[in-house]
Image 1 (cartoon, rainbow, N blue to C red):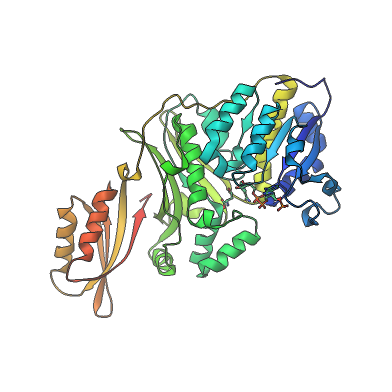
Image 2: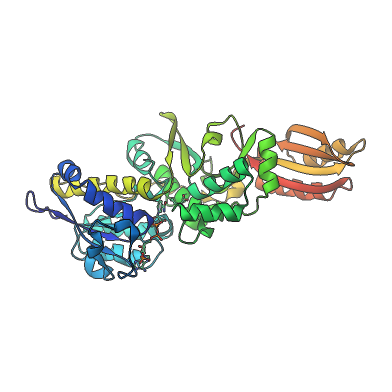
Length: 433
Ligand code: NDP
Ligand code: HSE
């Protein structure tokens, strides 16, 4: 990485001027004096690459920044010291980042989908070129979580990471619970507020959270975890009734990302789960995120803050810009990929989980005993059973102790086949009880 002459500006290229890019551009401009003082050299925004440079941009009105818009991303990255990628998607983001690295620029990206799919190619290219690659904004928006896991905990042994890492789905589940709104209506609202991905199915199907979980797990366990290693279940299978029922029973439904080290290897999963109303995760509202990290020596750590939205995400991007820029001015280099441990990455069936099974059964003697017997036959142990009378049927809620997914699936299937069971209303995992 070559050092610029003392005091000369560092040229910054911005790829993307949407929800995040607009705020990055505005903050680079409005905080230019402070940023120059923190870096030791001025940061000069050299250009902003977009798909359509002729489209008027409300967010840039009155700033003069629209004069920097260009459709020539390739040309722009080749004349930059630092490249910020907030375009999203795989191509052309990947190609532009590689071109930037090849021409000696340090790169900053918020693109978790790209990192989870092909991060190692980018990390290796940056390492070979001797430039920095930073990606704090790729996980949990404004929350500093990448740097703590990658650097602050580099001397510890992370055992487990559990959290809410998608702002859109947390916002959706929260509004569904508090206002009884329909999922589709709230997803549109999340899009309007700039929380959702360009294609919001990445949020609601759990893939955005899975990408973040893969990135965190790779950093935490010094092992490459790819997107396809993460078992994913989104929130589309949840019903308004599931959410209302949870609320009526002092629980909330959250989309959780869980990465854990087991005796046999690493397991990473994303799925909705019931959490008790008194648990700290239940208090994470709107588009906020929270991540718990359990490390051998540090113990339990909790990170909390805004998980999505233009300005909060731009804060994380700018932190990375300052780090990379300081290295340009003062020398030094950020961390490189650490994947030496190469732990086996196991399917989610290796994780032990607990579930709450809600069923409608015939209201007559011996029913509970039949259900309990079927559960026991599958080697699953019952933690609690509750029964509420209904109209001609009884509502039974069976909460299990931790068991393998295979055993739980077989249990539910067998319960469906019991003659006195009318319907299995829902099966949800439980965490934090
Ligand atoms: P937007 O869709 O709002 O903005 C994307 C920008 O990139 C637009 O300016 C668009 O140009 C430009 N762009 C997209 N494709 C191309 C292309 N092929 N060529 C040139 N320019 C292109 O996305 P966001 O700002 O919401 O997100 C950007 C990235 O940040 C994504 O990776 C996302 O996952 C990540 N992120 C987003 C967060 C959020 O809260 N929104 C939070 C954390 C990370 P044009 O304007 O002309 O269409
Ligand atoms: N769509 C993402 C979310 C943006 O809702 O969390 C932040 O990564």
